[in-house]
Length: 418
Image 1 (cartoon, rainbow, N blue to C red):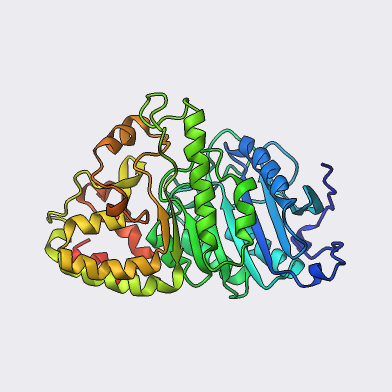
Image 2 (image 1 turned 135 degrees about the vertical axis):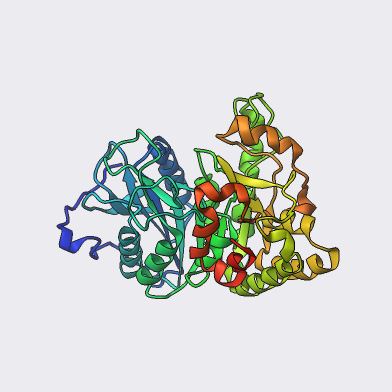
């Protein structure tokens, strides 16, 4: 697999290049999908395997389906941009070293995709580390609290990275790169992407958002299985993506007893990765319905309130829990009549999900044991996470930084004393 590197000067970063799309089909492409690999971190060893899976999948694509990658790996060649076609890289272009967590780099990658490989519709896969809605100093400034990226900035794989991209910055970068043309979907092949705050922030730049509210295994998505689904013209294409992803890990955990969540080999048999699809056009209605439902329990939501967190399903563990299952929390804390009215809006915004009561976790000694006590089965959970302020979060500033997300413009946590 020989890559043809064309050195570009800084001023021509991601400029258009020639590619040999001469057939009539390739002059009228249906969809272009960009997979954005932020792999200049401790995930870099998994990038090559995923690229092999993408090459395998590309053999089943037709000429009207364009699979594009932007790859920045650690301890490797300069970042490059390429199309994967018929099992190999074509039209590879190397670019100057940069930080994938920089919104400007994502914006330029999207502009390159759109101008060099135009199509009737587009998809974006975000590959790398992530932590949901968490927000800190903007863009590429180092901070522990962060959202997406994980670029070491030193072409090394020694850590999860020191540069991160906040979700509001991501939304602006996508809007600019696509010149306000919404993507058909954004899929996060990264941890904690399936949260309502992230989906709401991205509602103007994508029609659907797909991801997991929980941790994703280092191996990530089975791209050889799901890439054909990304090009489906079905109105429910997201179901096939989620089914293939979910079922892959069901089988993987049966065959791999060394995968475990609670330091007990084999305890993930029967479980998988919780996954969700969000229809973004329904999110404003969901936000309004959620604000109304929260208003019915306003006293419980104050710092002195009695909101019930006991044995509620949560997905992210980073010293404290910042992403609870939205459906599970609201069902446990509101009246049946009020909740059922809200659930109608939720079901429209969340057309498909697959729940798993256990999943592979890095925090085995913390969340691993607590999963046993979750009070939630399929019917009690919606696999879309949401932040609920807590008095014991004050040292993290989460109770105030959440207010930088557009979701809070409707929910307004500050009205409850936060």
